[in-house]
Image 1 (cartoon, rainbow, N blue to C red):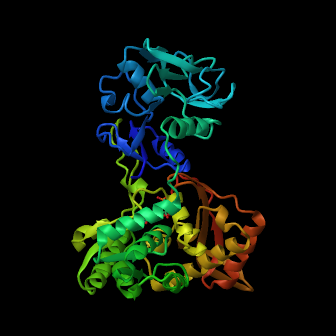
Image 2: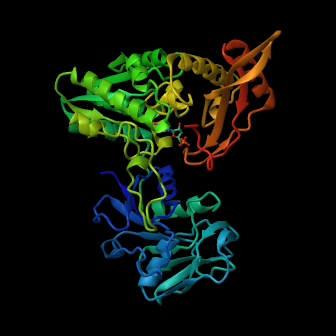
Image 3: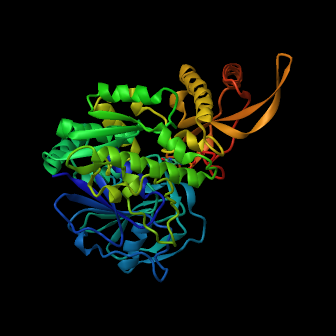
Length: 509
Ligand code: XMP
């Protein structure tokens, strides 16, 4: 039995962060929407209620019936979750009269044995709420206060039910991790045995039971997710896993062969498919970025489908889907703010008429990396920068030709290789080169040139949703620019992109 903490999501931007903090304690947890709470099962050791952009006093404020959990397992309400329990039990929650966003300090901590164990007086906590708890129900006791928020934390008498007004999951709450540890480990009594190693063992056992002697086909991309998914399935069913790695002609220089070699070295049963011509033909004359994406997605499905059907009796399609792609986002204030745009091969499972197996669909990206490391996957694959499915096609502005691909591959290679040599590659979240659809005048020797401009882009980011341009050292930029112009025929100007996301995006198309 896999012990877990259940997190009920009321739409806070921080819900996933709560999950990550719990998992950092080596305790498995799952996020479920507040309006679809799962029944209490033996594996659920405790429940955390998230924050929310809503106010409990709104007419249609998100609500949940906690009777299935309260008094049976420990419950911790965070911010909105804490206010909701007060509101539902006869207390009062009112709009705050003073701003309660940002840093605050706990000046009283009254419960040294339980949730607030080891929390120091003056500990910095992070507040983010428009409402405040003005009066607690009778059987609720205050266990921490700040100078402006009397009820910063409470406990319900004779029950292991707690509420905290601050956000323990954000790093600005300097002892937030201790509060979560107290709850998860000491109060819920979780055994902290969820590690990459146990994840691998349990997942491989589960895959063996699920797949038996069935065959699985999986498309590798060279990225972390599909590689780790493949290795897990491979450990479960060995040669019955058929991997397909498609060369779409839009990969980085030399990447197809290198990655194919790594996969073979890892023992995977992998077939490399040279489909460059099909992709270039599908892209011919297309200039609109979305048209290019669609053409690439369609061609990939056709190529993959044909390859997969050349294998006899395949029942399953393996995919490297990760947790953030499957968490049902709670939309309590109109349509969800998260716009999922990059589903390149979304139609694949329907078209292939296969069952889908997704061994990573409970993991966050950094957990996938840890599992990959534990599985012994090459660092070159684990530490790889993200690379978009449509590849260089969306870094060549306008129409795509084989010649343009060859040119930008050279530029990209010099840039990425330079970052690696300078020890900057691992500092950067993602980097690449973009071929602009313009030419500019230059002078080389005694001759006037009229050639292409390339842009370099390097960003720091945590999840790709927001990003900042990376402050590359001037010396480095100067050297790389020289090298590109001297070595890549057809380029006479290099520029560096200093836009953040938002308002720009990481890719130019
Ligand atoms: P943007 O450009 O939207 O990119 O800031 C965010 C992240 O997504 C990647 N990206 C894509 N990945 N198919 C993909 O698989 C796509 O069509 C696509 N477009 C952007 C981008 O490289 C960055 O990591």
